Length: 108
Image 1: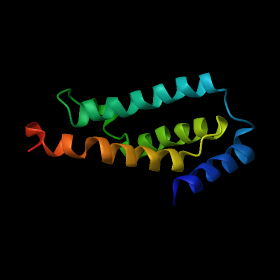
Image 2 (image 1 turned 30 degrees about the horizontal axis):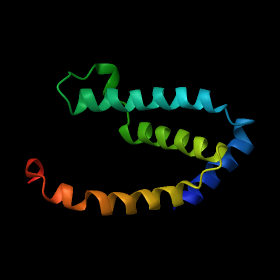
Image 3 (image 1 turned 180 degrees about the vertical axis):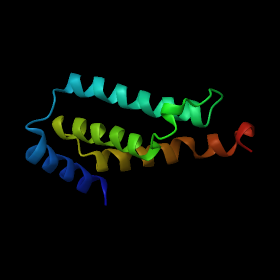
């Protein structure tokens, strides 16, 4: 699946199940909430915090998918072709950051 296809699938889901998109501000708040859930799992499972019993069954992949879903919603409702934007960003990062990261002694 490519990003454009994912955007189309999200739009189809919204049309068939979601009534309409939440407004952009609501989706931004929802994105923040979902990123917080990802952060909680990572902090407790991979970081120094102890994992609560109630967190042990949480699926990191599912939470990351929630983040992606909301990002795709925001792209759709603001008219962004996320695949084009992502490809442009990768090109920028490759040109800008290649030498910087290759020469970073902290990463070697």
